[in-house]
Image (cartoon, rainbow, N blue to C red; front, top):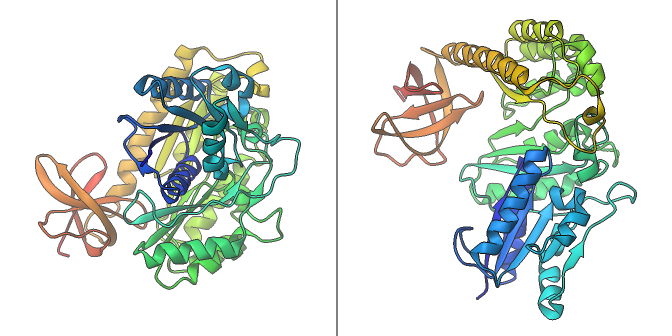
Length: 435
């Protein structure tokens, strides 16, 4: 039996596609082994969101070649899609598979083995209309929570982002296919699903469907007890949208609203399609219809031209909105984007300083959000055994994605546990008792 090893770089969508390719290989008779072991085939699902991601992708492709010089090395995904010429010249790579072509992996492996010449399948994703690439999962690496890719591509063209060039335009998966996959996963015991995509809020704009309708259909799958949503754009968070979500008991009040900056002049340079007032209104609506929802976000510091005053405006805005968690990124100049050519690039030392300020703010706000639940009754879906401060606990997450721990010898995998949050065990884990 031939052996295959896979390695994923990048986002949850990439992770989903890597698992889908793994299942395709398994069904074709391959034995899946850890990436560190000798294999006949190495598949690296690459990322290209930053220049550093490109570099890591190249490093992993070359590492695979060193692990077994006689193996077939497959470079798939965003890096080889955006750097096709370099990938085809790279002697470490035998097969190049772009986005929207990952379902062809077995056919391409057979073709390479027959001809032993570099093989590629890359769509002209930016100029030719693409259909949604139908990949699906019967199981996932997670034991209790399943991520489902329901959408691909992006039409936004933010000035800092390469993703529209790597992924192409918006393509939505048929709602019936999503529901069928949810039903298969539910039958295997999964109780929580996460709907994700490259630009989830655009779901259905190409098919006449919409995200809210899809969520309703997933909600109707009886065995599923929790639904989380991937990153949302502020403009989808209307009163109608939030009110409808709040009527569905399976919806987790855990919302990631992409922000990037709390200053309107910076948002305009980024080509974001909203302003801070519109974003804040979305947060007000979520807090109107959900009790203490977890609102998380992304923030880029040091975007070209970001002045001291603009950064101060962003910091004050973040304090006012008061997030549960913030993912802070230092702006990374990305070749091929408009922002890379902008003047007034911010020095790295200034980015580091501003990042540190916001990371400290994030730590404070996150602690305050979690402490709200001390002494309150919560329900958590338990996932795995963890050792905390030298003691064994079972850990899991509440609907708001607060991590809790139960001290027990009992196997609580994939079980719901209700109890009271008693105390903080670590920076982000709280003890659940009286269950």
